[in-house]
Length: 291
Image 1 (cartoon, one colour):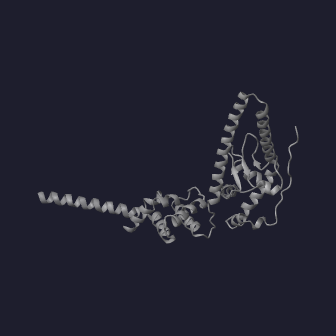
Image 2 (cartoon, helix red, strand yellow):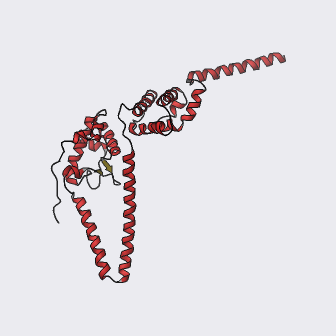
Image 3 (tube, rainbow, N blue to C red):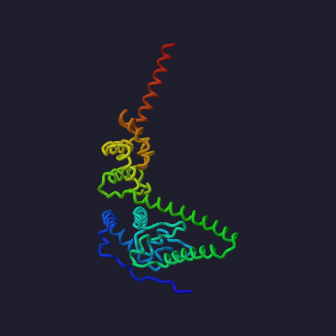
């Protein structure tokens, strides 16, 4: 068995830090930590054909990556989401982390890619041999299997193309963009009401703000007003906990806002108390009148 080829160096082009995705990442909070973590993942993956796993049985989780790369676990969690959104990594079905741009950093074909290429050549040779020497029944069976394999390959290819298009079409919002700022404003309100709220992916949140502006034709001022209104209303602040939900309920919130300022819990209880007192007085008045 031939020895597996390993790479012990990483070829980093001089314009690496001028790349748009790297500059966008560096512009984020903790951006330089994210870039350093990405480079550590690349170095760790170069002798594994771009694949990152603890071993054949156990994939890496956030805590393990934090330990292996000596990186704060919160940085790891946020960075993984950002890298996936930018198409820098892919999480395979078995939880393996695949560094999608590894070949451009090592400047050579990985063993995995070479193996797959040789397998395709071998399959093509087998098909040719069968077409010239196999009995008709064997040839038909192999042809049927080849067609099935081809159809599955096309299906997988189409899914990968759609996935790549989705990643490409997904905008990346810098922190000073109106979409990101409005998302952060909603999050700040939510954290005031619930400090234990799980931190969301603000890039995903900003995407829904973008939909509201581009597709729904809402102005940033209208969105800002509805964010404030929803989080000051005793009912809606526990129901609008994301920009996606804000978009879904926008019309209801707009109508509610037009009908008046949101009532606090105290105001609602006070109104109910006053209504009860008025009802009691009316009952007493009726009793007195009947006497």
